[in-house]
Image (cartoon, rainbow, N blue to C red; front, top):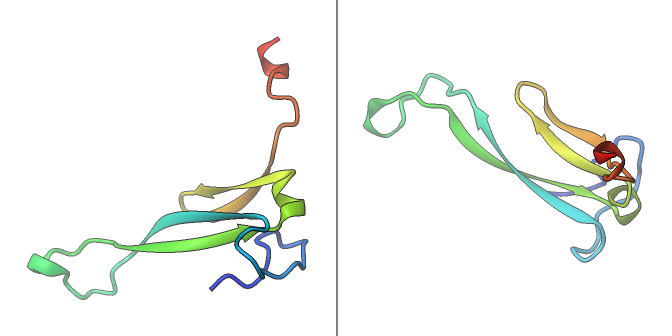
Length: 84
């Protein structure tokens, strides 16, 4: 369940779906040795949800990095600057 903003430096609590931005990530979990259907051992898939409050979502986004998980990334305020 979403409880607070995914930004560790923010203490805003999740109250309404209309405030901020919700992110959905599908992650893989290693099996604990139990065989899946057909006796194949495959990583289990897990869906996780993260939320950024309106203030944080205006300047940041969340990205998923394989091996380390979800991280905050600042938004580029001038996306056309790199094209010049």
